[in-house]
Length: 363
Ligand SMILES: *Cc1c(COP(=O)(O)O)cnc(C)c1O
Image 1 (cartoon, rainbow, N blue to C red):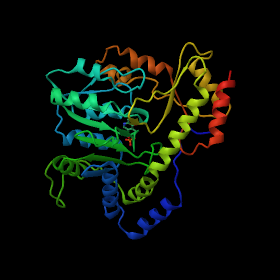
Image 2: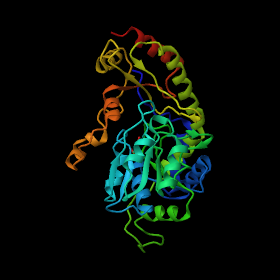
Image 3: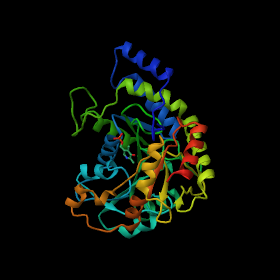
Image 4: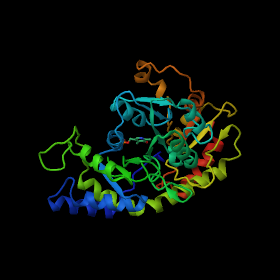
């Protein structure tokens, strides 16, 4: 089976983990600090604060920005649930702006429509590895005096005009879950250039404590283990190379399937580095099979696919119960049409050829 995602863990990671296990210092120790330093250098921010997953990184970020009950945060309805749920965690209200049909990222024009007196921040997601249009997003933040949080859980190493995502916002978050562009099993990171935000995130991560058994604010246990950080340091060294392979696989896929009637292929906007966390096509009504028939056909031939995401966030049962009844047509249509094909660095050239040949013959 050609899997839709697959962590690439090698001897370097194994050795690094063993070294930590033998060191006697397993959590929030020197290896975590080294990973934070390397990650901040890589992204180009002054600070990086490691957490135990990407969701806790989002929660800690919103707390560090002092987002509170009654605040409105504009975000995308087309993402993994964590990006919006983190807003609920702090008692604020996620306000959904519809997406751009070509990139699947939140549409800046739609954001403007949703701004009210209560809007405090934008929480954007660089979906599938493609950066949002950061010129437009930062302009909105300046014009309306809004804070910016970037969810970079799918875009490690992606760039907008040569600048890495994760360095644009007041703060940004990453996930190192096992399917992401780099992994630590479970893990997360907050990046920021702001001393105060970094300091507060560190407090939130460790039960509000700077000094052992002295607690200044309400915090959580969001610490990363040194075992995870050891894996992360080795993964980070390989990130650019692994992204290169994702980009190469994506180019090959596009070249071979661009002329199939009824399939719409990923669109990359100018001046960005898209790191293809996912290679997601649209299966439209013009295609001779339904999306589910195509997915089933590929699966029978040993090719795993996935739908990211089958239901937009505002349509989830949880949000229905919270009285979200608006219609966001672009996100809803995307949910009915998208299908992700294997693009990760574990997919070989021959396997890409097999995928494209199968796509042409399936049915
Ligand atoms: C994976 C992901 C998260 C959550 O990260 P976890 O490490 O699984 O908690 C948040 N947002 C997006 C967009 C993601 O893809």
